Image (cartoon, rainbow, N blue to C red; front, side, top):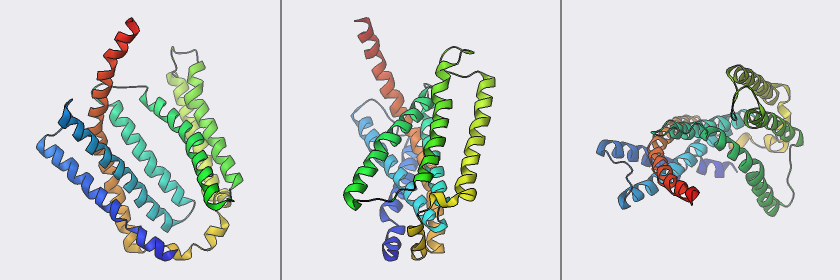
Length: 263
């Protein structure tokens, strides 16, 4: 297991993606290349999308290497932070594009919650069952995760539909401030429970006991940390480029919807 980790700690794919993303952004910016509704623009969008996805996976790979070194549950927190930065960067760049989409963040987060809780978890259980037949599940830790997620999703995504202070599915300033404070306190209590009070709820004891030989070297750790930062910055920059593609696609679909409604 140690040999396998040592070989995969520096994935050539992840390092290549970091280099490609930086070179692609620098070249496109220097040459003034951007998306246009043409055949060349379509090729540019496809290449950009491939490199963007590859850079996201590279960032997750580097975060996993660091997480393996620092151990649980802090490794999970690092992975969560990396994925959150990527999500916020992608959503924010599209929201702040030439044509703002204020509801994009809410709709995207709602979709992520549904996809993860239903699709992703189901696929993991199915594949894990086919591969290992019987799996160990930390029931207490999973219950805490789901409890916090249910409350956060309810007060941020569902309750705004039933408030009467302001029209539409939105909170007033006072309500938004209250919900923000409650959200921060709730997540703070969850982090305290995960990292200090009931740390054992989130650690598989059998895996933790035999994990001493899977530690990355200090050189690998520092290199992965630098490459993680490069990957995250590259995701933000490439997402800004890709927001032009999204804006063009949205503008192209809008007239067809209007004509369809008139019919």
